Image 1 (cartoon, rainbow, N blue to C red):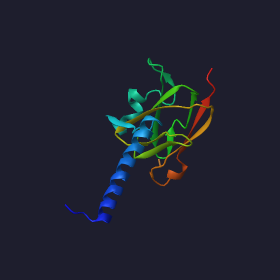
Image 2: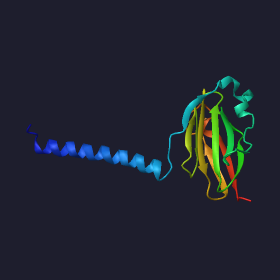
Image 3: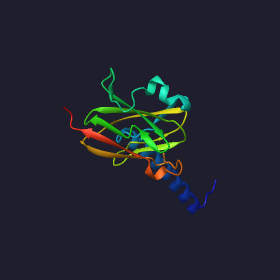
Image 4: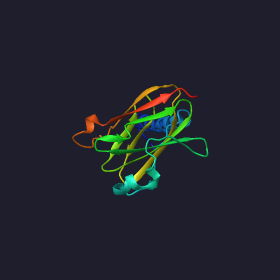
Length: 159
Ligand code: CUA
């Protein structure tokens, strides 16, 4: 089949771009630890505050595998709790959900970024290499108070 030179050129360019995009996804997943937060576990958004899986809000709980679990609920227009203290250099597993509408959860200056979707539990594990205060912002428009919906993670020097 005779394909025009420029058409062939564009076909190759499209192919190279697709391969490059897949490579970027692979590199960010493996080298930078970026991964989609899970949306596999379900929860009744109306019963979030009585659910045993969210009975220790904001209280870091050391799990048998050594990971520190932190539970956070997003609701109009705050995070419960608004402030969490965790140690630096330890894996922290955030387990979160929404009690009403879809919220965002982004820890500024890190790669921690997920959505809090009502009915689902979002989970990701991250490590804060340095102590300091980290701002949590809601980056999904959730209503009139969206712009004031924020929280704080205080990362303390490991003891
Ligand atoms: Cu919650 Cu915007």
